[in-house]
Image (cartoon, rainbow, N blue to C red; front, side, top):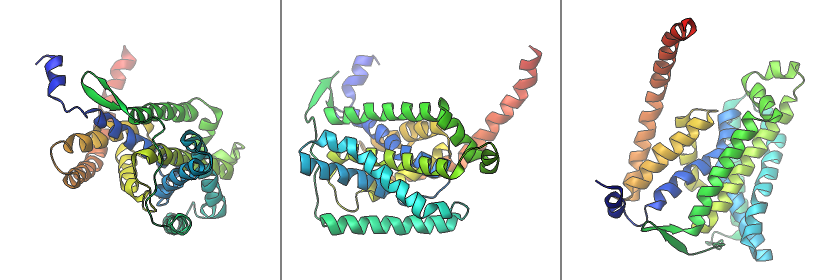
Length: 303
């Protein structure tokens, strides 16, 4: 089959597959910091997306600028995350069950506050661009393309921050051995606060970017919470590359393709089964890869 024929038989909205892949990466980037690195089972992650979305809505309502709202949203979410970490979670880093309950309680508080301030009525954040264009017969909505590009940019930014900066070096030291990190002069408490704030800010940015594609209500963040955890767990805690592969190629891609053939509900069930199978098989594959590398090491050393 020629490429032209292959393209011709695909649905015109096939770009949504790429957009959904990007969405899975985007919603999990913030959780990569709070859960993947800090090992805090952050049940308030969805509420940081909610904060970002409503911050964008509020700024739009005041200034009329959606773009300004999207730029302000991560700052608001990051500040709220910093307050949460310094006010509550810093006392619970060695108590995972207590931190889980604390984040659950904080999530409920945030949702209730949003409902109290904005009411449960649906709200809308305007699409800053609107419309779509055609490429090779595919319909590409402009804002979904912006979400894809923003996801790629944020992922590269996170990689550079963690792998190419002094902050990233200190962050990795804090995560791997906080006691040793303290003896080296690293302020572990400040580093944890910074990581949690960055994760919260990324979640806020995700909420603001996705807000024009969804109707807002106080349950907005819950739509993304489960998928965020599935992505991070399947990709491996602290593994950014695994997060991107698991999110984009496995979960997001599977859900997007399945929705062409079956209902969204059944597609979600299949994706959940894929995630369960992936969590079970990933350690086996990891051990297999490690074993193969160990067998090849003496040959490489001899060469």
